[in-house]
Length: 319
Image (cartoon, rainbow, N blue to C red; front, side, top):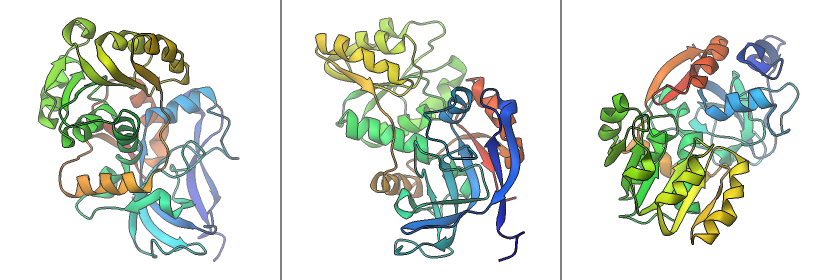
């Protein structure tokens, strides 16, 4: 392998802070270790955690150099020692290593094989790359943390966003009654995904519009967590996805006979396979608002930071 083919393009954080700190550079191509696969990245999903960690310096878990991103869809280029789950040429998608560095904004990613699953042939790489982090977050929040049961009432804040619109669909596949907050012009979109009750948070205080909720999913943070406790029925669960500081709600929730706390998503092969099945059978679809080339990652971040997108933003890595 010569020097040219052994290198790759990647987006690194040259300076923590604003999107201008993102730089395209050329780096050595990674090599898969034991139990790992090397994936030729076709597309990389953009998530709120990407720009939040870029702004804050992250959790101190970055490699050198820090390469942004976790959502990956691509093709297996090589397999490491002991890997039997995939072969060269298999199309896969996943959220490797989170919250440690995955380096999804790059032409190649090497990561544990079981942090991926097979990409359904029914969806392309752009839409597959939009799914892993948000769908695993929704799955783990609803089923592993809140123990969702059919017929329960679920309130999803920021429901038209990248996470929210996926959470609406996953909750509906399990028979939930979904209450969603979003601006009015996004209500038709959410009704199309199955949302049962829509609240325009810009003109209506959701605490006056809904009661007796079993589960609240909060990707917003701030005072949303505390206010959301008011709409939960006794024994209900608030899952905060915005800030570890929201764990401070736990004692207040306990005093009210409720459950609350911050949840951090983690790689999950079984849940990802279930998500792939939902996507393959048409029960889960990632809405993609914009697709940018890898070189325009900073522009993609700036758009995401507006908080006004519907669905996901994706980087096309393989042109």
